[in-house]
Length: 343
Ligand SMILES: [Zn+2]
Ligand SMILES: [Zn+2]
Image (cartoon, rainbow, N blue to C red; front, side, top):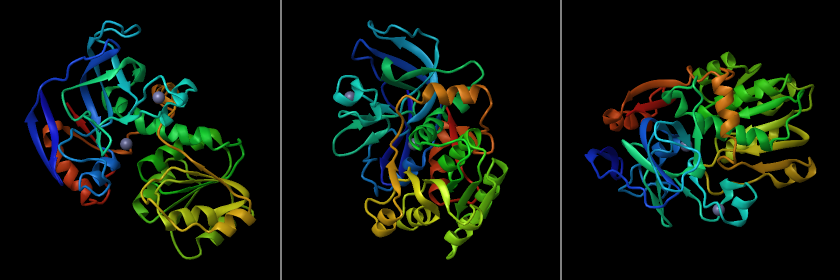
């Protein structure tokens, strides 16, 4: 089969590799139709994250058709249109038993190679995954959009942890792909003021079109501006979707006393935390990792057209042109958000 192989630092080859084989009875072989490029792939391809050690076929946001099933597969048949969880959980450990599959002790992320494991991903014609991570695509969701069920589910997981009330004012720091999806989910769940903060004016414009009441360019007096839109108090809830010291600081500054911050951004391993502000203002800090069963919810929203992914998809291109698109994304070409590769 053809595959887009990361075979060196920032270097791809479009190569022939063997079709993966079903090696356990609960596995399925999927013929992939579309796979989206994630920011973590783009950041990872230069070796900086240690999670895309070449050679690796990246890609963990994908959709396709089941081409073969193992002998113990129960609920899927050849021809089913599916997407799959980007985390392959073991189904047996303490966390899996509790449904917290994102916290699985033996988790392997599709399209990732790190010190502990290597799990080839979806920038290829076929992939093998266990049945337990599969989700059927609703009829109304095509493969291109189906490939984006993963980031929608990531946003839905963050929402599920935020303890949002219907009238809550919300601050979103970071209007990249996840931030813009999260914004749409939040718009469906609160009538309160939604404020989006970013350093990119174009993205803020997009945020405005997708439901933000107020958009703010990151600046020195950002806390004051946020309080100005929230009765002088600060937002009830905040989401941080970048993962740097400055943006976490903005989120903390923009919250009201007793507010809750859901942390989704995951770029910096360490940051300085304004401890006294968190303690004396009694803030609640909640990390959000990947997805724990939010796929059906995400896919239903997509089927019902309750969230609009079209402004977020910048380009759809064939897999063999993947390397060029990676380069454009790596070079932060203005206006480029999500690129989906067709297979
Ligand atoms: Zn991703
Ligand atoms: Zn597990």
